[in-house]
Image (cartoon, rainbow, N blue to C red; front, side, top):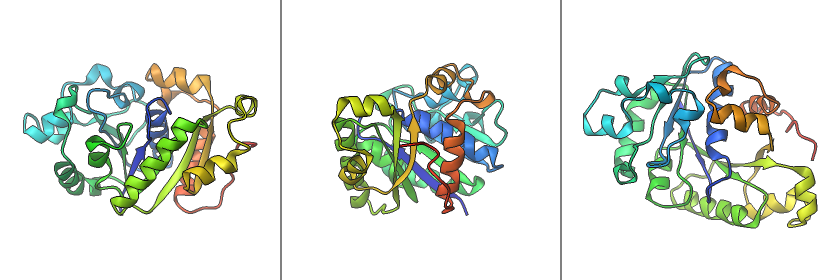
Length: 246
């Protein structure tokens, strides 16, 4: 049965799209068929990170408006067999409404093992569109009070929408910086403040940032690769370690 996972954050800059694409790549390494839907209208980035920007002709708004067939707007990621993405609209005003997104995902999700929906930052209509058809959610935060507060806002909105299966991803974690700033006593305080069960801690990794921005993450290894492989196992309920020393 297909699973729809929305990846969300309360503020920009947390690395949410990197988490979305890295998770999708990890799932395809386990031979799952995956669709990444970019819902960040006007600020799309999944196409770049998955290396399909040069192929793009159509996006999600073209499919919804009937300008093209869905197959015309689906792009397979080079180096990751079974991983497809559909780009967000170029213009913010072409944002897809929640009810239309719910129908679109409902009609197409069973063609994939996993549908990863990359939500825009914040809790506006775009977030609602991204989350409305989700079975579960990953909330991405950094260890900074503004980001943590944003995570709380996301959790509250998910609860209002009836999405109770949410897990926390602490992204771009740098232990030395975390200890030096002294903003939180430890990571447990971060987790308790957001109020979501932890599923992964992803370290700050210059290589993953460079590879994703160049669109070659699918064909190159970085240290965070094993973190996302473990994350896929934890999503399936398997008891595997976090793979990072806290």
